Length: 638
Image (cartoon, rainbow, N blue to C red):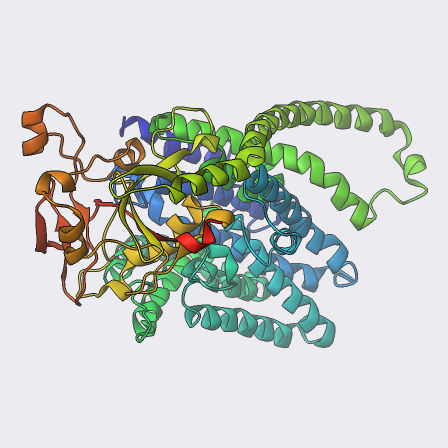
């Protein structure tokens, strides 16, 4: 199966280079970085981002090796670097070559990014309300619609490029000197990088804080390079032509070396060594430098290749016209629509790519008339007369295109209608489910099993709307607080991403529990019942060694099963636990993490056989099972 996955990078390369034109020996292409070629580059970058995100899903961000395709999980910054480069380059070339370019900039250029952005935000809001069944306030809906909070994780690029576009417009409106304006715009991009580097990470959700996360800025340097190329293209191309035979192999070698070095730096330094007392800025700065250099090498290498090879096929050209829509919508199928627990990796790639392209085409069909209306296209009174005898033929071609697009639109609308229909069932019964949970919590006893919240554990349905009610064990019911622990291991994770001594307060596992899992499992109504722990102030935590000994009487009581999803995601599995083997229970057992109470290179665990071991597993040991623990305030059950 891993070998079969190679068909996707092969098809990606075939899509990119099919129909390409190679310059004759001793000559160079005439269309280097022209409008058509840059649109082709955006198309390849868009499909590269889609494959990158799918590979992250099937390989658990590169932790589970799935053959050579695993390398795509680390190539996202290279594809976004293409987007940034083309944007910076296009702005400068346009302002230098087009008369009165700034006059219609807000109408023409801004709408191309904002209309698809607002449309995708609307779709994500509808999915969140109807699919997740989460009632939300009008204020929150407005924030999500405007992009002040990003339900769509890929929307970060639109927010950042909007800031850069706005800076471009203001600078070049005020500054008539193109060279000075370019320098000022480059400074703005560098300031964005600097602010992002010092902003850390969001403590709640990815979309709650602008520039909080390395993905906001680790390829932005390509925008600055695009500005430089827009001003100095002729000189750079002339220089590259003179030394082409040296530069092409040199930068090919530099790219391979840079990729290896970047991976090494990212794994040993990285962006996640920050804590309450250490900002980790030195490690982040070193990692950023390695990634920025790699992006610059990669983009220039593409320019060198483009000097000899011109991309030229209709499919890639069409994808270029809908690349923004594909970029914005593909995450919906990746994270919200489908559940890939029982879908093999090959089908996962096919399903997401096909749906993303169809949905992108449907979005383009919807947003194009809006964009044209805003831009004022078609208001020329003499339009019909100017068309003359060619009008009928042009209209026929337009009609054929619209028919094809309508077919795509109908297909995606049917899919969305099905999703919304299933989601409505969850929405209308959400409050009723919470009421049942409250009634059960009012009458619980220690060792009872109850349901609270929802999580993907054993979903056989086609869509992700089948999240199961999550099973919990009641550990304690005293002092107006009910302490719960999940019955099974529901995820797998490291305790900390790096091989170094760490306390619970700074662990990546703590961050995952209180961000990703807290947001994913509980609705807003359920969150109101959860209170922070007294020891660490966490909304979701793990048991300590002493608590585990207190609440589980024997080793056998501490043994766990892991869910289907946890196993699929790579959680450690041992089917032959000693006790369960002899009892013929056929559990998929795993060792599971406990909360450390001191700063150490190891963290405590419960072994497969239920033994508490305090100093065996290093904190960066992958795929240990996770059993979240929460505390319910009984006073909030009324």
